[in-house]
Image (cartoon, rainbow, N blue to C red; front, side):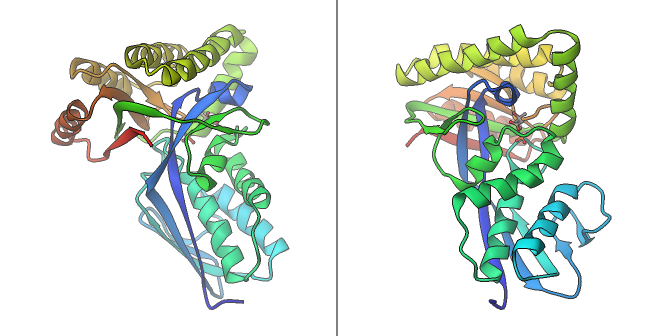
Length: 304
Ligand code: PMV
């Protein structure tokens, strides 16, 4: 047993294929290695969380069911009981940037570090998925996988993910709408549509967009990638997982020279991503958004 345990995990951004990935269609996701969750776990007489968004005992607190279940499981497999969990984050929560998976990922690492037990990637993934089940209902595993791997991925549920090479003279602007999205609500809403309204054709169309995007990435066809992002946003809107602020951000991006834009992640709030050729347009749009009251705007280079 060590005096304390530490863990760290990064966020992710889904470029193409959110929601469709839950239905076994492919998705493309990118790690956000500079945006991280840090966890320190100190043995204590009760389990409580100290964080920018919540301070207090976890047990009985709403919204943390996934982490509570994860800690219960960790207590079953590791020799520890209670701990003070101190969390530092550079990932906005409820944004579609994979914060819940990154928090679970870092908690698992910290518990294994505290108890001095080796952690293999399969166990790590399964434990994150246990927690994600409470936040996503039916998680594809894309967030869990990305929180422990740091390369761009083509991801398909229940298949081995493939790393992809992205070498484009382009940048994504990732802008938080300031509206917190609920991935669980969005996933459940789409599940109802899939059952009631026979929406599987629309879902397959989302899957095809991702396959076309993979070809466009290889062929370095930026205009096509932009168009595919617009098409994906249109389909996600038809699944009712967009939000007026996200739609407005998409319009603003296009009028500021983006080649394409879409919501990313669960939706109903959270982030919008926009593709810009080169870097200067992305920087100018970031500045415009900062001045318009959007503090969380990041830029991701689309080259190794
Ligand atoms: O909102 P996020 O960052 O948790 O992304 C969810 C991605 C979904 O495809 C909507 C759900 C999933 O489990 O893949």
